[in-house]
Length: 67
Image: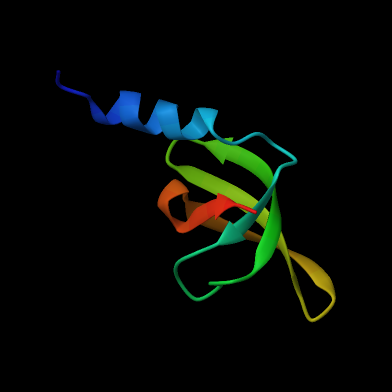
């Protein structure tokens, strides 16, 4: 069975919902916790707290996991 990139991305997107808490597992914000504010293809926007302020960060689905 061959899985296309679109099917792979859709399967990953189904794992997450807007408003869900996640942990960043890769990149400069590794170990930060945040809440998903937007899902857009392979990209996801999450709100993380930096210096007591909510900051929007755009990451890929591979960079996050469920908290």
